[in-house]
Image (tube, rainbow, N blue to C red; front, side, top):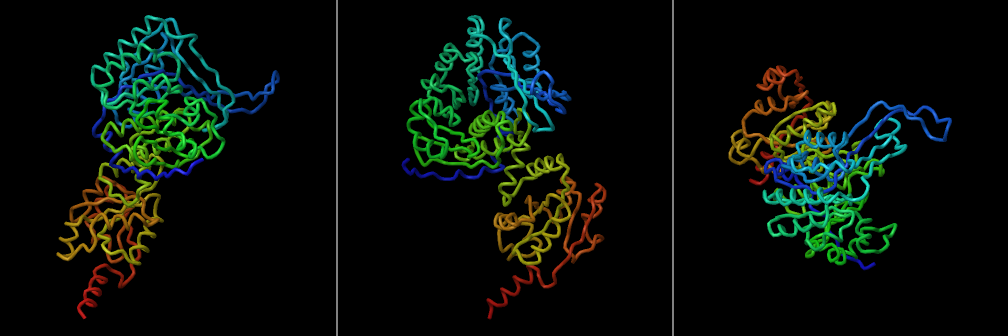
Length: 502
């Protein structure tokens, strides 16, 4: 294979995740919905009538799958979502519509088909999550939808497109909801669709619509080209076949998912961009990751995030999902938390900080908080932060803003601006999250964060701190940590100025 240059996609910022919830892009999902079920239990013995484990059910979970999973993933990220699909007039169909509605997806345009059963997949899993899959039994609707259902789906598609969504995400699982009649309706409105993303098992029928992006797995990409897929070095295979993939799919760009190897963006112009996977999971633990990838990329781009950064955001959302059992989605909070962990030098807004901390607290983590100027980092700072980190699970450092440092330290300070101070502090292994504040005391921020532990250096006593009564009122504790004499920023700056004057 020819050597083709590929660059690393830029790291997605917490701001990109917040942009989705702030702008709430209107996304229309078109496709095949499935009811996913997970029957979990304990297997203690083997059946006498066959060499199979006997699973004693203890719980059953259900979740929207297929296009339903994509729609729920969009809603979980903060998008305003509507879906056009078809379900049977049966218990599974009612359960599926209820689950979509509870997740915040508008289902007014779902078409009931009394002649077909709702598609469903139920897994039997032994052991605690993620457990060991033992068997799966499916309900597959026979044949294609009838003519009345096809017409209703086409009409609902036209009506939904008339409402001018910011993006359309097609999730085609080949179950018949996306007939040629539906594609013709999309084609008529194509000029009014700002962003058309197609996630389909068979991409060929969608080529004439000239999608803005398609999101195939490498297996789906090989199928549309009618070629064999190598067992190894699938990234190189994707890079070599990029022109053929764009031609076969009609897409402006191909977002190729590579399973454990992450994803790669193959644009018509420019260098391909790769984003490695952050998490590896067995196939049984990756259910819905492709739907979440497509949904996150669509929501990000529809919100104004550059497409290069949207690739990283989508891969991060997929990384979150593969760590979760069942058919899962990535919430805005979980995405923000993961992005913050991947960019520790970023200065989180107070809203984003609270979002991340909510995820940590849900996991039972103990929050430690400290603050300071941290203008010129020295040995005393490093020792202090290391000691603070040992008091809990997540350490938050709140930096005084530049204006605040000037008020406290004089017109020649800070030596380093906020972004530089945050970049250095965030690079320390002891520090998990960085934010800032513009008041002389962090009392108001402490009231928001409500830390379990508040730390200050050893040149203070608890009685000296205005923060002490605030922290104690909230049930937290104040800890005064060790202090290295003659290791202060002011002393360092003074010595430097003295040396410069000689």
